Length: 431
Image (cartoon, helix red, strand yellow):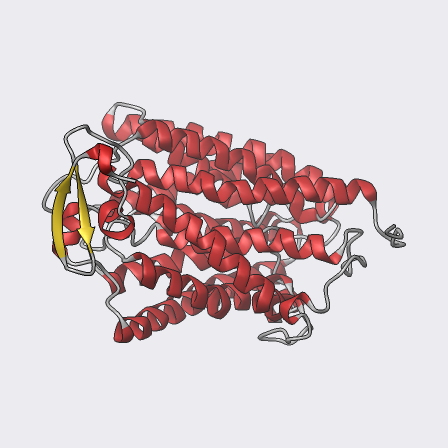
């Protein structure tokens, strides 16, 4: 019979178990959100990239990623003392009243969804196998490094940068990596020549709603217990996206005289992202202002990007990289020790905090972009990153997985990889 470990809080542990499950749910929710935004012939492949992220990132996190992020207090990278979870057990994680194993699991869900986020830049043309290789390398070389800098005792955290729930490794890390990935993989063959419209707006709305729901675990759980920080982050996660929605509605009306459902779903994500680094550090009133302000640059970048040749397909840079950067910077101005018990920002007399936040928004995007670019170039030397134009035209579902999301009743195309030929078969004959 297990013996209770001194220092473990049952209440904190129960909440963190629930929060971990909520954050894990966010990855299939993201898959639903992303799948609705692409064309129907790429629905399954887009979702499968999120499923692939769960598989690859979880295994690599348990083997080495967690150790590199959280073992030791080196300035740039952790150690290997927790390799394959050898040093992780039921004892309380330092600074918390929850078991080390639970802390590891909670942090794993952050790595998973961040890898999945980057896929939004290359859906509809990147081959599934190379994406899995990239996901494995990226989770170690980018995510684990940035997580150590921000949360694991690395140079940003020890230097004074405040990031409550992942503005550095999750939001800026994914957003600027997505830009690099889009540039390396290149634009879809039909980009700029025809409208590439979302095929299922209800998937997008449902995915966004589930993401918001999961974000209460993402931000609320980042206090690692049931104390004031988690309560503040929880409430701010309710307020901030609601204000982003209001401003986004106004921008849609000014630009096109109609409030769009895709815009509403995007606004929810932008608001949740913006409050992620700030949730436990700012007062609720400032969280509402942050939500309103975050809408502006993200909306502008989405509007601008569609007029360029940069096919960053699902606007990860605008929704995550930009909104995360705004949230990190906002902390430098509006952090309030009266609410967070840690530090004040510029508005409350501490100009140094703003410098710490500015340093993060200068260094992190650069690191994420450069390393992602290099990783994809390296993989591309070994195997092609993207599907052929013919396979892209057929759709990534049948060419990468031999399946379709929607059965039309008129037959389906199978790709016989060994023979390199196509064959029409009746739908009823498909497994």
